[in-house]
Image (cartoon, rainbow, N blue to C red):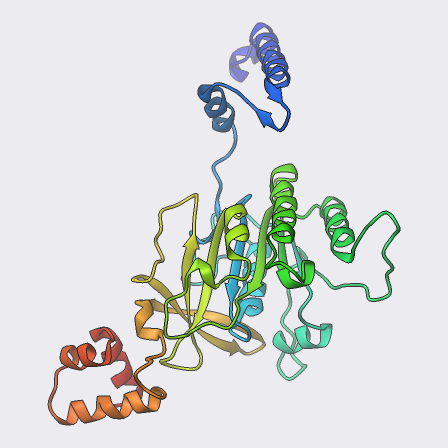
Length: 349
């Protein structure tokens, strides 16, 4: 009776073990140096037994992926990263974004802020502090440590320490803020390759998900964001599974937009004609990105034909006084009709 309920007989279990052993022997025989060669159907059969990756942050980042989030300085990378970490630690999605997994143990490596700066972002004038979930672990560099003789550099020692901490703390998600601390010369192909290989190995070896924050060199804000805006872009993009970026909006100082740069587990949804618009604001005691709308990237880029946004607004007002339609004004200013409507609403005209 018990065998029928479990739908497994001793004979089937033995046959399953034999098959598993045969597969392992086959794997050992198929290993040739750095390559493992198997029939295509064998790969599919093995992959079929593993769970389908869940979304961690909509289609931007999935489980067991090595992802890169990049943006210019002071755009809000760290703010969004902490918000994502908080979301994952609680198992609750950020409004406007998707989350498909239960609460996870998150390790946030903060090489940017001091503890006091971090406190400021999650408090109300250093009072009424935001309470994080116990699944959210934050780490800083111990300034008193010395590099053991077995390691050639701080980067090598730090990466080894990271692997140890992941095991000790049973971390399922790691967020590194930011890449330039781990490898100060990440623009160099050799350093970028070594770092991305290590992080990629960690995602496979430990079944963890890694998000790495990175800066962009000074860029022309009148042009769309591309993979070429990431420092050391070629090597870094080759080894990450996904990448997304934050852009500043020229429409309002507090507006930001998110755009997909690279993806493997999904189609390219959030492209230049469908970016996610967010507003950067502090809700009581937690600085965060608030979902606003979907939009077109060009509406948020700086217009190179005008000195600043006030010049563009003045021209728009003149065109409105002349009786021009929103469509005509949009054509002249190089924006969408929707952007003109929104700007008129902001200005009250």
